[in-house]
Amino acid sequence: MKTVLGIVTCCLLLTGCAAQSTTARGGQRNLLTTADLARAGDVSLYDALRMLRPTFLQARPASTTGTAQTEIQVYVGPLQMEGVDHLRQIMAKDVKEVRYLEPREANARFGGSHGSGALLITMMD
Image (spheres, rainbow, N blue to C red):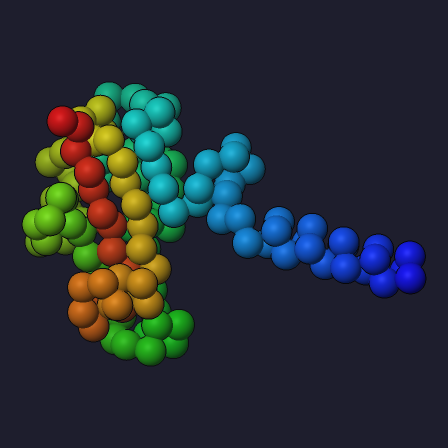
């Protein structure tokens, strides 16, 4: 009985740890906050992402997304922008939050043209 209880406890602990989407610093891997962006200094949002989360800017190959390779889609508030180059016009210090959506999540939310996912940018008030 103790063996079964021990196995169940280990499984629960491992499941709980695996379910967390965090980085080594304790933050969420698909989210950058104002505090995270401040570490990048007085740079554009594009440069901050390149320093802090370069994977946010990478197009995903067709073999992993099931669609043709596409650029990451960018949304500032409710508006879709023309692409990641728009991030060069935004200062990181003016951003409240950057959230990366995986392709499957982005396609479910916005439609099927998000083979590389989407960046949701929330500006400071």
